Every structure is written in structure tokens, then in C-alpha cells.
Length: 515
Image (cartoon, rainbow, N blue to C red; front, side, top):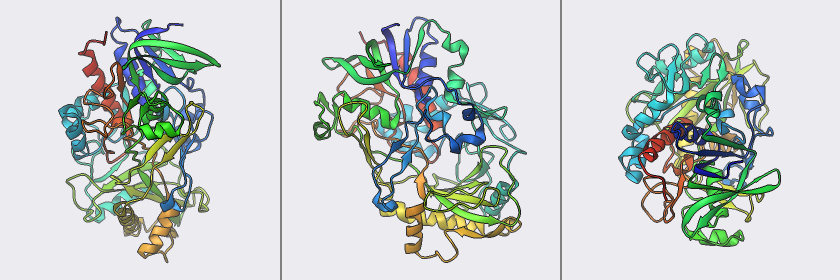
């Protein structure tokens, strides 16, 4: 087994797959990719309709939050992929870049390369758009972005028509210059099958490169330092500890794994590390802070007058991004989102109607202001993380969530849905007051699986990485994943992760490796 590399990438998820693939294009660059899990072997992963059933399987890290006061003290399951391809093996496959305004804070934090205009080349390098309505969209990247046509459910077509009759703008897709409006979901599907980021960036021909070494089943315990220079990692596989060395260490373990690895290595808030029994090597107060996540209410459920046909895509077929104060507004970053699911979709607090008898509108807040933390409970990788997203801890999040539910109901009661709608099951016709909606939200709100921000970029004392995504005060160590996001984009985060990884690899190719 090789033990020395030019670049060692920690985490084989979305960002890590991109970076390992792109950097190993240079035959002179020895790249090692460490992944705690294995190659995907479950055939259900490739079936777009099976994604809701993948959580909790052996390749899910299956993290848990602490009880959340504003969600009825519920503990939330946080699924994250523990296999090559990471969470791109588990997600709902919707591809949304975000609104250009979403990246204003990124540009302010890290400079022009992280603004929307600066990231455009990264988006374009990643994407291969196809399907009806994609004329003029980007072609030629590794990652498929499919815009469906005739497969879209008749229930979803009625939902989109309901929005249009209310004056909601019609969009060709969600990845243009504006986001507020209606469109079918662009999906990471090719020929009816899910395409993970690893499928796209690490096909057999790439995996066969002699300068790319894939280390599966290796879990990193700590980063090895020589003074303030990162020189390698201690990795555990099959009970054996190996020291692996590189000129550059790139952390791509995600918004949960990356801050935990930094803190296990003695990098983070001094008091937090001391409480976990970890010696503080380098004080960085922002590690594990600024945790953000989207939530969706599951959901505004309607009993159907006639059988709801099974989805021919992946159940959740259309997002509708809106401005809650004026749903006809086309310009600017939206503050709420709806999603039409051609199935009953509820949390464990409710009983779902039988499949085929109901459909659901999910709804949520695109730019939540609640901020949480991730902490280690002890010094080792087996010590569970303490995840506290502080869901709905701001009045803005609670009031905007209420507006999202009211907007979902407005769309759901339009005449365009008359042939499908029998009656509202949830929240229930009697639930109309702010207090009633708050109670429903506390039971119905669920993660949208978009954790980010825990090693944010910036130049202030609370930031973790600089504009080059290098860890402040250290050398040879970068972070490239969703943890560097200063703020959440409006929608699913995977498209932005790919753009960040593509942008960073172009940057680092122009930068000599540290001696």
C-alpha cells in the first residue's frame, strides 16, 4: 500500500470525488483518496424511486441531533452517506444551483471567485444537461442534469398549473438567472437510473489511473502535524493504524465529519476541546460553529379523489421557489420553497394515508437564520458527535415557516387541483391560527439533509478557512466541502458543492504544492 502522496483527499463523497478525479488528471500528481465506506453495492441506490428507503442502512452514518426545543423536543435523524459517492448515493437527486444573490455573502467572505459569477465556470465544468427544455444549457461535464418532460406526474402538472394561475412565474428550469417560480425538478438521473458523483467523476477508467490510489474502509482518526504544517493522517482500517503522508491534505468529509476531524486533531474552540478531553493544538473558535440546515414540513397532505399514479421519476417532482410576501415576484432570492410529492409524506408523529391515496406539498424556509453547533463528545472517532442545529430558534424562521405552510395551502386549494383533491388531511382544516401552525410545524418539520457552514470561509476571527480554503494559521491543510459555505444557497447544496470543488481544483493546479 502506498503511504506517501502529493495530495491526500479525506472523504470520497461529492467534493472528494471531484477533487480526486480532477487532480489525478495530472499524471505527475500522486493522489490518495480515503473513504471510510466501501463501493456502492446495494442495487436500490441506482433506483430513483428507492431513495426514501435508503436511510438507516449500513452505508448511512445515521447521525442524530440532540432534542430540539422548537420541534417538540424531537431527535432528528441526519442521514449521510458512508460509501464512495457519499450522500449523492442517498439524496433525492434534485439539482439546483441557487439564486445568484445566494452567493453574495460568499463573495464578501472569500472574494470574487466565490461569488455567483466566479463559480459559474465551476457549475459549467460539472454539468451535462439534457432532456426537454434544456436548449442552451451546459453540455459536456461529467455530471448529468436531466430535465424531465412527459414523465412528470399529472398531479404535479396540476400543482404547477395551480401556481401559474396564482401568477407564479413559469421557469424553464431551476438553474437559470432567476429561481422564483415553477419548474419540474432537474435531476441527477441518466437512462432512468441515479448517477452519483462517484459514478460521474470516478468511472473505471479514472479509477484505473496509476497515480490515483483509493483507500476504502479507512477511517481517519487524526491529522499528523510537524509544528503547524499538516504532513499526514493516522488512518484505521481493519483494526490496523496506518500513517499516510502527503504534501497537501484536503478535508472533504462534509459539514459533520470535517469539523469533527479537525477537533479530534486539536484544532477548534479551546473550551470545547478541553471538555471533550482533547489537547488544543491550535485554537480556532469557529470550528463546529455556524451550523445551518434547511427544513421541510412533512407535510400539507391531501386525500385524493382518484388513485394517485406512481411516480415515474423520484416522487418529489417539482420545487416551487417563492417570495412569501408576493408569490408573483420573479426577481431576487426567494424566501420559501414548496415541493409536490406524489405520495403521502409525514414524520413519525403522524400516520400516513395509504400509498396511492394521497399526495403532499412539502414547504420550508430557503434562508434560515438559526445557527447551531457540532461538538465531539470525546477524543476518538467512535465518540458520537453532539449535533445541535437549534432548529427554528429565531422568530424569522418560525414566522417564515408559517408563511410557507399558508402558501402551500393556497396553492393546494386552487381549481386546477379539483380533479385530484378530496380534502386536506394535514395540518387539518381546523388548524389556522399562528399557535396551531406552530404546533403542527414542531411535529412536522424535518431535515432537508443540507448541513453546511461548520468551517466557514472568511477573514474574521470566527472563520476557519481563508479565500483559498486553507485552514487559518496552518499550512498544508485545506477544507473543500459544504462546511466552508458562509450561508446556505436557496436549494439543495450538492450543485454548489460540485462548483466549489471544481473551482478549487482549478485554483490549486496553479499553485505549487507546499514543500
